[in-house]
Length: 343
Image (tube, rainbow, N blue to C red; front, side):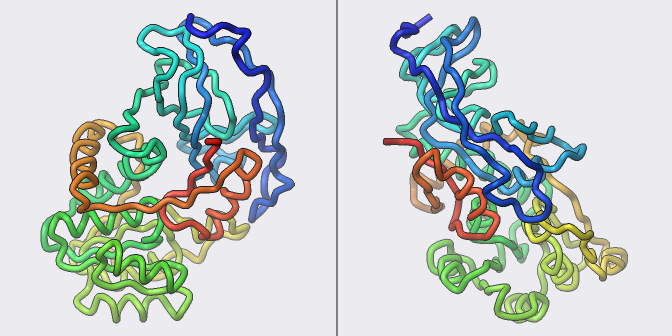
């Protein structure tokens, strides 16, 4: 054991889900509570979280329904990706001062099973990058484009939610691998400028400025071969209309309908998938961890040479954790939304 119990904090603040949202979550659905902190047992480490992640998939975990990941429990701390510093260790191979990535976010201090923690190197990239471009969102983009969508050089690619943590990486990766055209949609004119001027998209549009189908047709007059879907709804319907024969769709997210209380109308033109011989395939990043080493090596290289860039929206302060999450659902982030607990 490293670090004496006397030097450890006595309490930790943590965010609890206290009510299951009906439609859009509200601040009243959450509570910031204090919990005691104890020295870690054998095989465990105590981590002071420096940054934690808020992600769209967390909205689904607030519903008490069976899914690919267990729902959050009421009156218990929520969880999600976090990076932090080991302040006490009961596990071989981990020492005080080590920086680690783990899954117990939404709290100041985390008692983590050492088998569920991964050491990270803050000299390769900022620690928060391991929650974004070098973490789960980055791997989602990489696997979803190259494995799920079977991207090949010369493909024309459309990305919805393209200014977000996943979408911004998908577009840049497609350009780096020889896409003939990359088009993105976003929810503000400022984000549209970012897509073209900073991320190198060939065209982009603000979906609030008119029907998605019309704007996509203008941006991709020769059609698209790959659609990376982070939004669902109207975007998916528009993409099906513009996809060329043997087009591929990666179904990653449907944020447009996460807070709906009524079923969506669906893509009304799904029958087009038959004649076009389209492939629509969902992605869960957990199926693709075999790509992890290849992904980190290639993306770290792109970052090092400046060929790939990323943005973060950082909200400071534990007390602002749920505000950051609600802002994410409203599209207030550019790139990865991070809650930072650094002093």
